[in-house]
Every structure is written in C-alpha cells, then in structure tokens.
Image 1: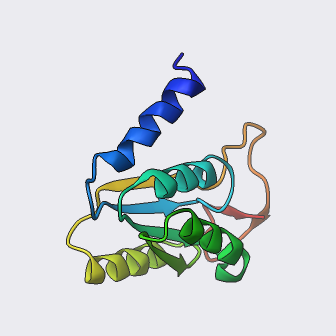
Image 2: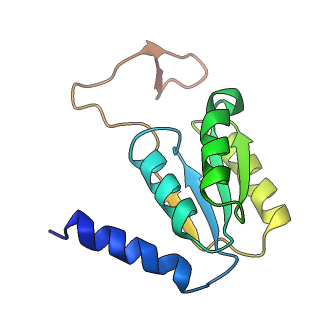
Length: 132
C-alpha cells in the first residue's frame, strides 16, 4: 500500500504542475471519503472549478467557506438537490453543462450499501425503492 507520506507528496506537486481550469464535480462530498477528497483536491489544485452536489447548501456553507479559504483561486459552486431522483440528476447535469465545456473529474461517493437487506418505508410512487 502507498504510504500517506507519498500521497501527500504527490498531492503537493499537483498545484506546482500549474494545470489551470480543471473542472471537478463531487457528488456526495459533504461527509466521508467525498469530503476528504474534495478538501484535498481543492487545496492542491491550481485554479480549479469545483462543483459540489448535495442536499443542503445551508449545511454545506462551512465546508464551502473552508474550501474557498484553502484555495482562494478556486471557483466553488454548490448545487442543492437530492440525487436519488433522476430528474434532479438531469437538472444538475444541465446546470453544469450550461456553464462548462468539459468535466475533467467526476467523483461520486454518496450513500452506503446495506448488507442487512432493505431498510426504510415502501413508496407507492416508486415500488422498487425504499426510503428512510
């Protein structure tokens, strides 16, 4: 396994490469692995454009402030939506497409996998899904 020392060294050289304008979309970056990845990327990238997609901009405001403080040259965008609905994914995608010519990195890490079977309640609108 690669040591954390080597990961940090690699991350530190990322900004020095001066590759400006990378566009990155993080889905599920308000906690867990996505959060850590968004923080590390934003801190170490050179003038990136970062999109975070999450359920609550109000809850994400401290994170957005932290990301901006870690890299004042970054452009940070938050799209508030619930991605469990495909129409919301389409709307978020359309919003990004209207502003960007390309997306360089898509990081998707929302939710979790339950090994204990289905959890939640039955929905008559989506009989194949369960909702907590």
